[in-house]
Length: 75
Image 1 (cartoon, rainbow, N blue to C red):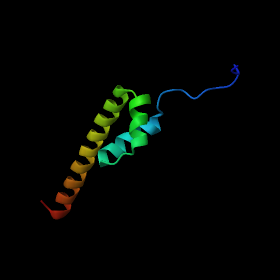
Image 2: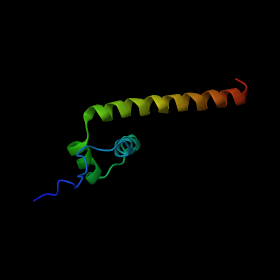
Image 3: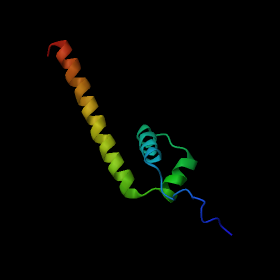
Image 4: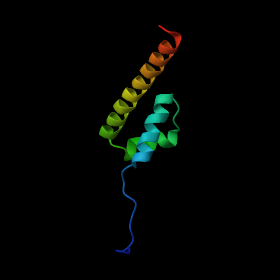
């Protein structure tokens, strides 16, 4: 019999796990265990949103670095 007062862990992935998976995927490294977790517990919409936001953030950072280097170079 199960205890009605015992809290079970939710089935979905946490925000931290989702962001971690997106980051490691962007770097091109991911363990089989994490990949299996992503496909069994993760929601595709969460990965799409996190991936798009990560890509936009990455582009903005690169753009800022280039602008800063060009400004320092006097161009």
